[in-house]
Image (tube, rainbow, N blue to C red):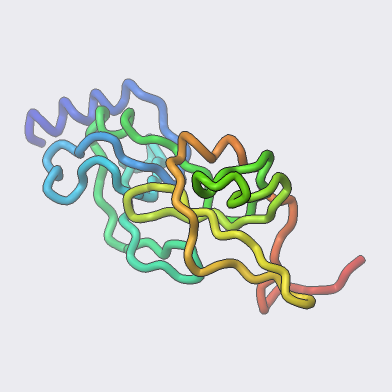
Amino acid sequence: MAKGVQRRRSDLQRIPAMLCGLYRTTVPMRGHADHLGPDQLVMLHDHRPESMPYVLFPARNEDNQWVFEDDPHTAEDADFLLGLVSLRPEGYYVVAHDLALSDDPDHKLAERSLVMVGYTRQGRVLLFPARFQGLTVQFATEGYPFDPDDVLDALTPANFDVPTDGDDRTVH
């Protein structure tokens, strides 16, 4: 094993394993700066000590949520990992207080609005407001962009699950 790889792995052992999930990069990954720089959305998997941490890039967006590539990029750079900014999972949230959508005070998401949270490839938050039409809830296909630091604390996870086609739908 090359001396530089040994040093990076020993540096990595000094920091605790991180929670798996969505992150925004803030620094380039050593040795991969050409394609893994700052301000990128990544999915981190860190199962140390069993395996080295790795990140996945977004491949495509389906229904306002990312599907990630199957090609992992090993993350042996402690500085890169320490620079990752944790993001909330994509999904359904309730707005905890009014959020301005523009300079117009009437253009806002009201407190207790239901939104779907998604992200851009750069790790910016997109809020997709819910619209109620008859007995259905539909979410916008174009989201309102926010910086994560400005909005994620204003969101509370919605406390419900959405059944999928294969789920038992019997109510007890």
